[in-house]
Image (cartoon, rainbow, N blue to C red):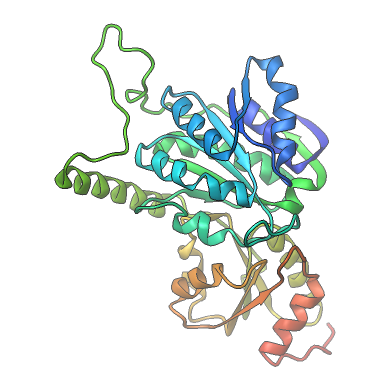
Length: 356
C-alpha cells in the first residue's frame, strides 16, 4: 500500500481507476474540475475513455448509455451542474442503472459561490428529479474516506443496480491530505443478465424507464419501493465519537463532521459530556444510530453548512424527543470548533467555565 499526498478531487479519480472504472463523462466546473483533469491524464495509461461533453445534460445521458453495457462509469460536477443532471438521474434510477455521480458541493442557490456548502442535501437525499426514486448518498469527511467511499460507491451501485452519489464539498475537493492507496478488495459477483452488449445468440434485452400502461407503472414502482426498503434496512452507516456517556449530541457530516470532533474534544476538557454522530450514508439516513439515545441525551445540535436541511431527518429519527437545535454557517463559510461549542453551551445553559 502506498501513502501519498493528493488533492481530494484527484483522490476520487485515482480510486475510480483502481475500482475498475474506465468510462467518464463530464463537464468542468469549479470546484470539481480536478476530477476530470486527473482522469484525462491517467485514463490513457489504463485504456480508459473520457469525454468532455457539451454540457452536464449530455454527460449524464452518456453515463446512461454506457451503464447499459454493464461497464463501470462515473461523472463529476458541482452544484449548478448537478442540477442540470437531475432529469438524467431520474431516468437512470428508473432504468436501474449502476453509476457513480460525484457532487463537489459549492454554495448556492443559483450560480452561488465557489466555497464549500452542504446546501445540496435535500436535492441529493430526497430526489432532485421527478418521480419516486432514491440515490444512495455517501458523505466522506476526509481524504481517506474520499478514496474508500469511491470504491464503496461502485460496489453499492452494482449490488443494487442504482446510481450512487458521493456528496463531497469545495473544502474536501480542494484540500491536500495524505491518503493510503489501498488495492481494491475482490468484489462480489452481481447479476449481469440485464446488460445490453449485443444480442447475438440470445433474445434481445430492453432497458427503459417508461411504463406503457398504468398497471405496469404501478408494478415497477412497487418493485423500486421494495428495493429502496431493502437498502434502508441493510445499508445505514454512521460513525460515533465519544457517545458512550454523552448527555448532548452533535450530528454532522462531511467537512463539518470533522470539525465537530474537535468540538467534542474541547467540550470534554470543560467537563461537558458531548458526543458526535456522523452520518456516512445520507440516504439511507442512519436512523438506527439514534435509537439508543432517544431517552438518554438531553439535547441535540445539528451542524450544517446550509439553512437547515439534515435537521429534518434528525428530528424524524428521534421523533422530536430530545430538544434539537441547528447551528449553521452559509455562503462558503466554515465554523470553528469553538463557535460550535459556544452555541451548545448557550442553548443548553451549560457552565462554560468548568475545567477538568
